[in-house]
Image (tube, rainbow, N blue to C red; front, side):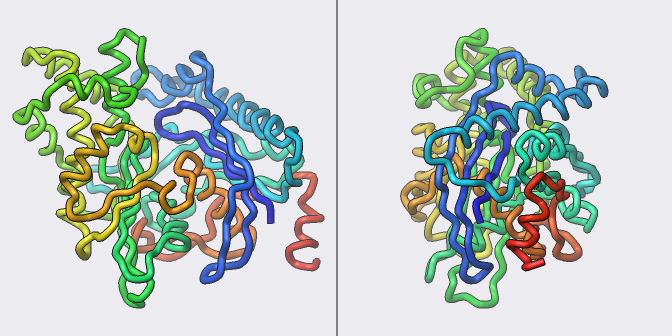
Length: 391
C-alpha cells in the first residue's frame, strides 16, 4: 500500500511529507520511503501557528481558522509532491497535523490534546482517504497520547542482541528504550525526556533579534561556556523527576518559559554565548538524566533523530554523558531521520486501516490498546475497501 505520512512538529518549521510503500504486518513488516520533502512555512504562517500555541495570545477564532487554513496548506503541499514526475499513485494519507496544546495535569496525566489540520479538507482536496487525529483515542483510554513513535520503533528498530535507545531531539526530546529481539519478555519504555530544541531556538531568535532561528552548527554554543550553577538549577525542574509514562510540550517548555530563563540569565550577567551554551547543555543533560533514572538496562546504542542531531556541540555532549553507549544517527542504520515522524504517521494510518491497534501500553500508559485516528473517506474510499478487504 502507498501511504503518505504528514506532520508539522513542535518547532513549526514546515510540513514534512513522506510517501511510503508499506507492506506486511507486525512481525513481518517493511516500510520504504519512496519520496519525501519538507515544505517550509513562510514567516507569517509560522507566526500564526506559534501565536495559536501561546495561551496568552491565542483566540478561539484564530485556532478555528488555523484548523482549516493549515489543512489547505497540507493538501496543497501533498498535491505538489504528487504532481512530480514518477510519483506513485496514493492509497491512503496519515496526517498528524500540528499540535496546538497538550494538557498535562499536575498529577502528570493528560486530559486533553489538540492537533489542528482538518482531515476532511485533505480528503476533499486530494480525493484520498485520510486518517487524522491520532492522539485522542489513546488519551480517551487513559494514555498520554504520546509518544506514538514508540510503536514504530518497536516494529522496525530493535537490535538482535543489544538494548537500544531511540532518541528524538525535536522541539521536545523523547526516547524509546528498546529491548533486543532475543529478549522475549522485556517491554519497550517510551516518554518525553524534556525540552529538546524549543528553549534553545527561542533563546537564539531573541538574542539575535530574529537574525537566527536556531544555533546553526552549534556556533553560538561553541563560543560560550556552560554556567554550571545555572544548569544545576534548571535540572531541578520537577518534570525530570516525574515517573513515566509522561509527556510535555510548549505548554511547559515554550515561549513563556524561554523568556523567563533569558531574563534570569541576563540578570546574572550571562552573555548570549553563555546562555546558548548552557541551554544546549540542558538538553543533553536532561536526556542523560532520563537514561540514568529510567533506562531498564544498560544502553548499548543510542540512535539520534530530529534537528538536534545536527548540532555538533549537543551531540558531543551526549557522547560524553552517555558513554560507553555508542551514539549514532538514524542515517547510520539506513533511515532518513528528517522524515522519520512522517513515516510513523504513514505506518499508523496503515495499521488503523487494517484494523490493528498501534499503541504500546508501556509507552503511553493507556488502559488498553486502541485503533488510532479518525477516518475521513476520500473519493477512493470504496475502491480502497475493495482492494483491502475484497468487499
